[in-house]
Length: 193
Ligand code: GDP
Ligand code: FE
Ligand code: FE
Image (tube, rainbow, N blue to C red):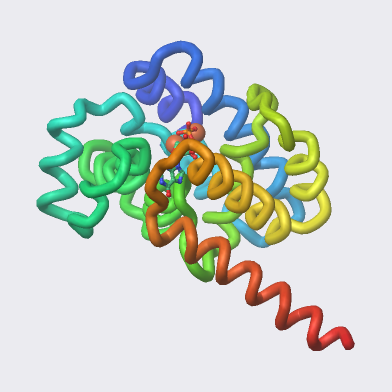
């Protein structure tokens, strides 16, 4: 699917502000993918459609999760539903049938253990796109230019802190993102000694 067609479809599903956020994610993801061996077409589609289901009716999201995804998702905040539901809808409604794009959309909110390069790029781009403005975003942008794993770790650490401070529950994949990157970092530093 061409970029212009994808954006036209997306625009119908999102309010202006969220559409502008998506354009920022697209630009940032393509910059992060520069110089990697990733298929830029996949980067483009995953970035454009990562929040496709952000405004999908709650009742329908529940239904789709019941039918197709781990039901434990329903016990957690509905904020984390739009990734899995979006991945599913992009495949079934739009016919974008690519497992790499599917996973990047599916895990863009929580991450998971052992994320692919594409998953990390979408996760980080979502966090640091030019429209984001929160304490720490400058540091996240700096890390993203230096070491993508460090940027994911920084983002997930901040997210966990934020959720704990608000007394919110944390989905296991969010912890898996944190633990897997921290353990990888520790293993790397042991090798360096
Ligand atoms: P957005 O869709 O572009 O706004 O960004 P995300 O998809 O990354 O995140 C949506 C929301 O989910 C944010 O407010 C995060 O803080 C929140 N979130 C991320 N991980 C978790 C989690 O494990 N549990 C809960 N309750 N919320 C989470
Ligand atoms: Fe999202
Ligand atoms: Fe987003």
